[in-house]
Image 1 (tube, rainbow, N blue to C red):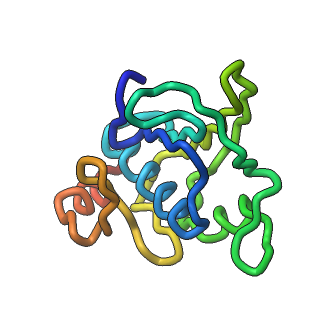
Image 2 (cartoon, rainbow, N blue to C red; image 1 turned 90 degrees about the vertical axis):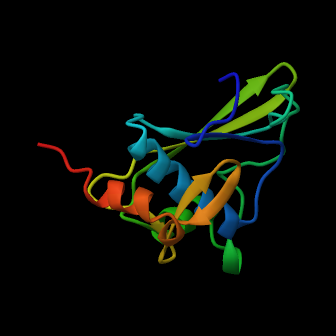
Amino acid sequence: MPAEVEWFDFKRSHLAPEKLGAYLSTLANEAALRREALGYLVFGVDDETHEVVGTSFDPYTAKAKGNQALMPWLTAGLRPNPGVEPHVVEHPDGRVVVLAVGPAREQPVTFQGTAWARTGNSLVELNKQPEKARALWTRGSD
């Protein structure tokens, strides 16, 4: 991707578990709104220059609250669970981690009870974006 968009985000390093959950909710909801097959959170890439800088983040060994494994903790907090697949790529300029998240289906995806969306580069609670919330609730398919 030449630039970040609502359903595709670059991060240099890992995020706190709660923030990561909010990003996954956002990406699932925004992917659904834009009819994308997946949303992506890419670690180890500078979000300004898009250069690979590498990351020490490992989704398989990272811990969440209470020393719980990160990935099961995250997916337990996502409702409904859109599916999250981690991919680790050993790039010549450093390790890159991609979290691919499925789009919201019949309703917005929440993390720990809060649905998230994106306005520009900022995460916002979906209830502050009524037009996006309405579009997600009425999106249905035949």
